[in-house]
Length: 115
Length: 114
Image (cartoon, rainbow over all chains, first blue to last red; front, top):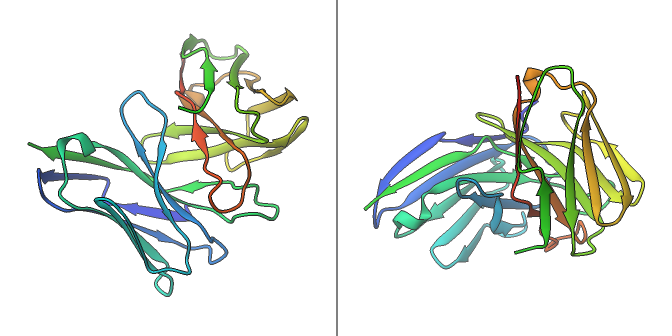
């Protein structure tokens, strides 16, 4: 059962444009939502994360928007740059307790930013 | 970069053979995870460890076993490799599981089962 659904599968934007990637989750027990960035041949690296007690978190050009009632969250990349070209994964987990921080990932979005 | 190494980085093997992948960390983190990455599926958790000799199954554990005899090493074994286990395998580590305890990923092992 896929508990985190991510869209689109691929995204092409022009330099300077806004990239938007969306995720939806099913398990209301999830309480931590990280986004990972992965370059070819590398492991994923944490980009930004949010807890459900806030509706938005911004770090530089990267913003997470969170809608708890709709069980959806999204990543916005402002002023997209060719160096942002990578695969992006949303994820969700239950912090603490017996979940041991296990991450459930979305399917991934391949972002290409054209110069 | 977090001190995580995976070996081998690439392996080609034949169906039916046993395969062991190694994850080694120098961070002394308590939690270690094995994921597999396949197109269209993102990363899926295979097994995880919450301490030495303490392990449990993840989402896609069938056909895999793990062992952790030391804090720094987490081994993933495919008892009898099948073509469906062709994938890229990532190890991850975490100091804790509370908010702010990030999972750091290794460089990955590309496994091809012929």
